[in-house]
Length: 496
Image 1 (cartoon, rainbow, N blue to C red):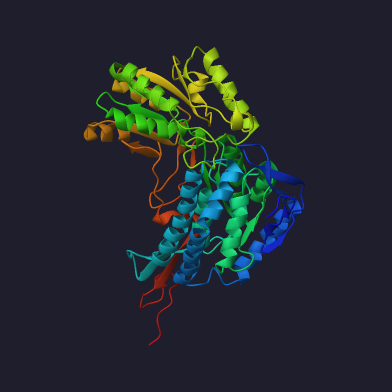
Image 2: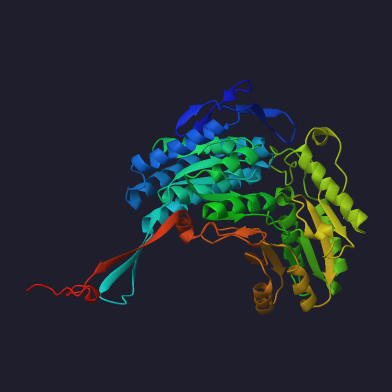
């Protein structure tokens, strides 16, 4: 791939230039273009969906035995691992994450395909308890063409979490990657084809979500949309889906509380809080962005936390030692800066950060330092709205009742963290916190085998888990009549 080259996109198995405007993918550490491509056009959307529909009907993929589909998914996992370093470096360039993190995301994508290959070939149908003279059975069948709309903060991992179960279920998939991070989705489509996925079952349509995402969601042949991104966009998709009576999976925003009780192990808690908010430069829906600390511990804990945050290594994403790279774009950094200014206007006090770093690479890319605010109360705007950056608001609490009320006082309910040596208390508190995921004495740990999703404005449905494959299937009930005599209602007697 050369910088002058315009990359083709994948439209129902055909690789060609998109019909939309030419644009660049930029490296957030320097602002320089990494690759050029043409966005997909609305005609491309139509061609991709129609082609996917034909592939679903005629490729035989949906009719293959589960272990036969699984073999292709296992091969996809192998190819991702074989190309692991190349893919990690490309994702580093595409969205500016440190290389250590992009390696982990690529490994996660491979593990996701492997997991859903296993889930596919071991998925069982159910003989349901008989309630009459019949045998009844529940089965699941693929939907058809599904759309996977993915975010810019963890492209290949997010795409794998949607594409792997959808393909395992027997569907065709149209991927709409984030406009500014299209490169890994295109690579994934190439890998799927190389692994033996029939032509037409996967497409990749880069471009504006407001145009292409809407067109996909509204298309009558799209039978499900799985979306990860902002809450406003997710609600818009949900409205369209409601008119179509179409199911959706929506993994949306968060303003997750992380809680340090007075008996917490401080070394573990400090490290966990730092990782929870400042890894990925805070560009994570599950970032632990609201910190609640027991008041007797507050001063000591904050002193240690600020010192730890100040030691975090910021720099070039290609540097093996970098812990925090740049933010995704200049516009996003400006949004983060506006929230910090708002926090100060609301009466907050800066304990750390709040100013762009300067000198060297910091003058080129979209860097922003770890920033910690205190002096705010949970009802203020800075504590209620998702910033999606390396900004932590810290608040002391006096009682568990006050803590629970404040922690749950949010439109979001995606994740939470609890730090305590008392496992019984932590368990009880974890059951009272309203969130799709609660970490106890750890944070931001994931398993593809464990369902993930949020409540309220954090989304609908669940991804991951062995039964995540069923999100992309329709359930059907079958009955076999076992009665010796004709149904009595008709008044027909059996002949001798």
